Image (cartoon, rainbow, N blue to C red; front, side):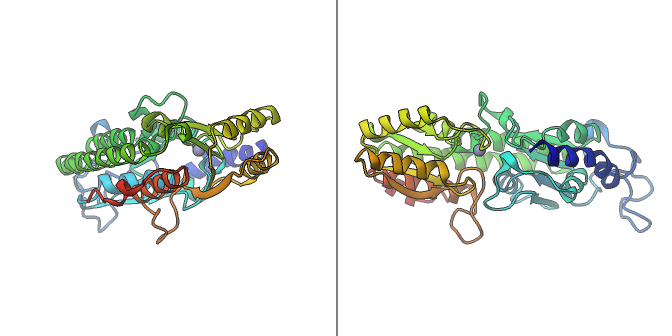
Length: 336
Ligand SMILES: [Zn+2]
């Protein structure tokens, strides 16, 4: 495991050097001989890392599809900003290794949107390097009291705070569009707070004893804390953690005792651990349903209905509430 990452890490400084223009010719500099920035544009990064109004489209690079969705919403009605994600649908960020192309995209970014708390376990060394180049790095986990759990999008109120934080970072970086960005971020935050209320309402319909959410890894801790479910991840906070047999046995005991009817796969995590749980429960005479796969650390593919943050939350909550015997009709109302 260490070897490919070490090799990749060793290649990073070279990739950064390749990808980043020499100091003094960054995004605030003239775009070229025919550049509209003109000769008067500063040949250095403007004060506080902010971009000059004439610097052209602002490039926002998010590590995950979930982070990119947030950035797109925050920039929704603001002209001249492009947002891209390094990791596509179904990709597990815990074990994702950045390619040289990714590093180049990060080095070419004006603003990087990352999760932190080791969600991008193999990329975090890059953030200080990018910051030293004058690139603004927004660490979304810093927006909430997240403990050591980076999966803050699972609590829509935390994700609202992340939207506000991203808005502040973008506004600081793009002063000429700051008001529009702040207005857009405030609108998104309101929308996620409405979603938060709907999720709370839907989860409250699950019979109390069955409010137990068993998933492949601990992505749903914030979800459980916010909405009142006991969450058990068969693996730890990272998909790289292993589970002991004793832990598995204790988990099956609890599932049988509480008559929990279903456990859940995740789209970005292999199924082995959950399969073992279903088999173990069956051997104890408890029929445990392997319910729909939840989207935990990545959005679904285009057209899946889980291809936006809001769609992912609605799809997850519907699956959880229905499989555990509640009424998910509150999730049918769109906030917009
Ligand atoms: Zn995760």
